[in-house]
Length: 439
Image 1: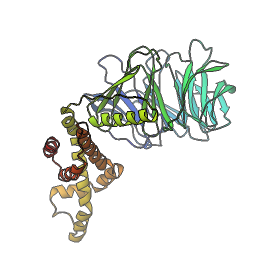
Image 2: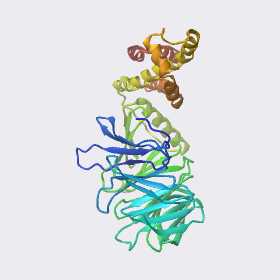
Image 3: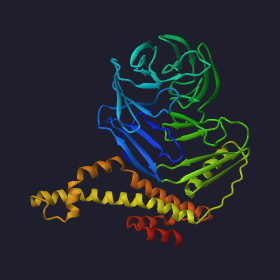
Image 4: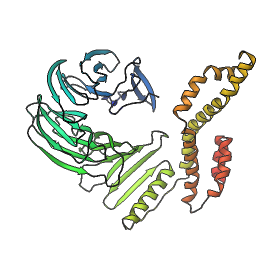
């Protein structure tokens, strides 16, 4: 499923009610389109799609207190719209701000929105509170729990400060180690703790009440990884403790366990481009990694060895490689590669077909396949422009897989890469499988 360019915090997983319920995802883009789809047998199934409109920059889920938070709220310009999980629009609210909304939080009948420097709170679409921030507001959340006598809005501001509000006034502020880019409640129900991420890649957890705050932990960014774009929490390992999921602007996705008991912890990762998977199990002094793609294991081995050498740590690595995984990965690559090769061939023909059309005055003499390419030329070029590097990326994956297969056997086959590229230039899956087997 393809959507337009998206902003931060414009994709949400809708709550799945019941064991057999289809998991649904809502995503909004800069074309103003809100798309909702479900996953069934590994395939994306459309639920609804709105018409294009003004650029959507934020999304949140909401609903009446104590009920499932499955209503979808999006903001465009200074307007907030609400949709049911089936796509029926039930709310259009104009905030009448002089600037566009860039951050939003929904809690029951309370709506909290921010423009660059302005914070507004509405209850049942009626003005409640207003605050002018001393620096740009990057994000907003609101705490609500039995420990608090009132909702506590928290603003993430560019000047390395979290501003905690009381009504229309500043209650107090909290200094953080970098410009905060994103806020997330650690526990969605009855939260009094906020996780923040910064543009320079730091993460922290702060416990907040109405008059004071306490930092529970901070994670620095010594390795200079990317800035934090998104944070969420989920009990991935099923131990009753929320794990922290972090997405960075360099494409890295990380999972942090807050549990420090020393028991084995398992994380699962899914390659969204190829569909391969990685299972990582950690316990004190050792780690076990399983993947259906041996190139993933090869990369992990290289990274771990490099880090261990740098830190002068003695590391013992052993492997158990399945030959079947290689053909499995090639078969997973096959439909993507076949699709990209077909697209590339069609695009290469467009200019020549246009010249023939001009020379002959029409395209009636062309076979149906070529006429179809001419008719779809604009769409084909647009699709090719959106993903120009996909073909090279797939070639790179196959080349790495070939080298890695034999690397684990202690053989260097880089001299045979040119023969592999010849096979790819005249691509046929069976020929490729035979080459891998016979090399």
